[in-house]
Length: 113
Figure 1 (cartoon, rainbow, N blue to C red):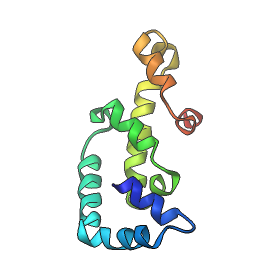
Figure 2 (tube, rainbow, N blue to C red):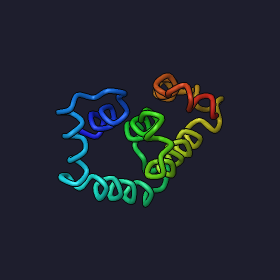
Figure 3 (tube, rainbow, N blue to C red):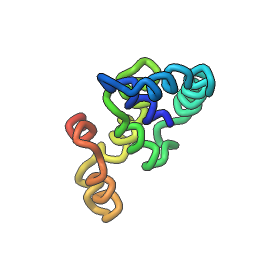
Figure 4 (cartoon, rainbow, N blue to C red):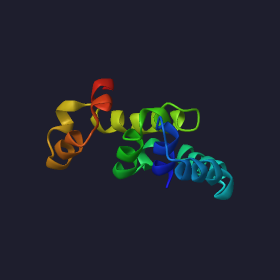
């Protein structure tokens, strides 16, 4: 749902129906409360507690969301987890699962390492 709203909000000419739905959604679904609750939950975790799927989902958010005030600190936690896993690249290459995790990283995360 958030992805659809984001796409509609970032589209240069959403249909009137989609624009009206997007305008009403934050209030109707209390999205600000939902986003803040998710953000608080994720920030309360140590980077090591973030599952790899969660890390990848955060790193693959659209750039506008990743860099927004709501998600910037959470995305930073995801980058800390990547650094924790791949801080020692020689060691990381010794297991098949680590190599697979490396290949699943977005380019931005690899560049940051």
